[in-house]
Length: 385
Image (cartoon, rainbow, N blue to C red):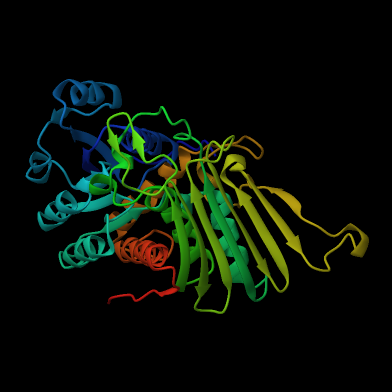
């Protein structure tokens, strides 16, 4: 921790980014942070150019985030020979076409979730990008929370035994006010879906990453505020779902942006024959663990709170002494470090990074949930190869 030796000959890679809003800010911060905190970084990112439709806003973002240039046409990123990584942090309706074009131009691509607004769009993106042979990663950043990675290690070790239950939910409150105006996340043509694709997709990905493949779903959706200043809401405000896993486990997946008092509550609990795990992103550095029959004995059983900050815990080689906490923004540092390492070493994005196939499969599950909500029937999830 804090070692600064070495790193004399670090190869560089140029980054071109589409989008300068919430995710553009998070990704830009991560590139700059990993350049000195993960020393020596796998590759030294150079922030070359950022694209956005509003000239004044994107120019300001370029100055703020440290990009050398800015453009209002994303295709100029695709043709820029200085750029080796195309980082798509734009709105959902700009995920497919620019990402495919960048990959077909030979650039490595990382794309924010959802990979596509529908499973069809996500499938085409996966297939066309895969055909190019570039490194491609879908940005499910919660795989890179130290406590989540530790949970995966515990499950893989067999310490939980046979997995019975997964309960996952992602709760926010930011549009509960009926006077909140219309934004792109409430427009199906731009977003694809609402709380399901925005929040539920994260839970779906973690369910697959931690427990296994989902075979079938039964879901219900609801739109609580159907009209807002600026237009009609055409996506779901909330989704509730019951899911079956291939390995015999059962689960529930819930997502809403109408949970008063919940700011960013991504939570899951996993129950197995030998123990259980529980996690809440609002307590990001903690993992609750219970092992049946463990000491201190039968009268003191229950969850123990593990502070995930030890030097041998996942990702902590980059950070501080134990107990000196990291935050939400550092998940992107871990994610991009993984991506750049895969580029440098020509290694696989999987299993810990989300591949474009993972992005597609999450979209297929989302579509099955929407079909179930429409039909009132249980839906089998059919995956294309």
